Image 1: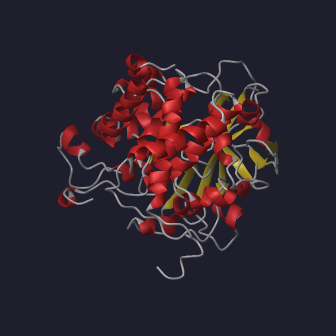
Image 2: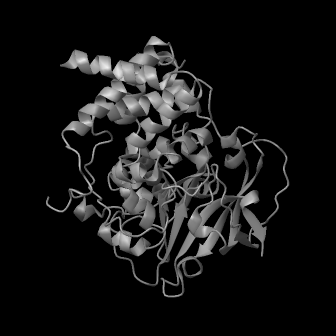
Image 3: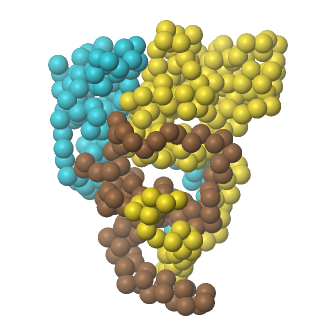
Length: 211
Length: 103
Length: 114
């Protein structure tokens, strides 16, 4: 686009291949020196690309919606309650769960880097790690929510949690109306990733098919 | 340090792109950078705070004009070189060799 | 070197930055605090936007490794981390949404009593 040249005075098509070469060079050196096991890299990638993701968190939320005693444990000792469902480990060692209600809406950010609860949500989406979200979530949370199509009444207090330490935050979204009698599996299908970061709401049954 | 990473409250980055269908990784090199960073952490030569600081020390103009896994790549290279596990010359030479082979 | 066979268990185990040291907290929930105006050249986790602002301790998370010294390789300096609530109007000015708030996790060494 004309006018963008001053910002991007390089050929975009060269960028990925140059990066790809730089990364290949690094990996080949590390393997040669016995510092990384390429097969371990494959397992790491497969774990976070196909195994660990927001479906884990959705199970936690669905359980909390279905079982008041579990919900109480989740809000008081988040990590232990999440571990009951088998989700533990790296970047989820010390979990805090915050509950959305009619009067309070919680939203999570990491302004300094990209801290995120991996065992329950997997790796963060691109927008969570990028400058627009990290800069604005603390200053204009309602404007950010509008980017996600979410508008909250002024009567609702928005609480933004900036993950500056090693605590990792999961939002417990509100159970949508019209879900009485649903099984945990049916409920889990309504729980979106964004609703557990606090940039979205859980789906209602009538909008189940949309994002 | 008052680096470019400390983004809270800055203006002008534009709206958030909330596309729900974005993949975890956008290219193979991102996968390898992610995994090499996690794996190298277990060498026991640095801790998570040193690792964050290595990313924060990136030139601020570069930090703001590159993608997330480029920050990780920069951080990993910095730590490996500072710890004497690789040298910048080795890295440049290996890249040149792979580049020549790819032609 | 991390081997492929050990990846799953290693990830599952994780590595908490929480430490068992018996360190007394300097603050308690409900107490008014101010984030110190610190500008170290090294690593720190007190964001610029909160320095010099006053808030209220919401909860005490317990004792954790201190990032500033841990990044410098000068020790873990174990100390309490608190979630501190700052009103949006305190941070961004009176014209900002009065009801909203920011909760930030801050270590003892980042805080002074008001």
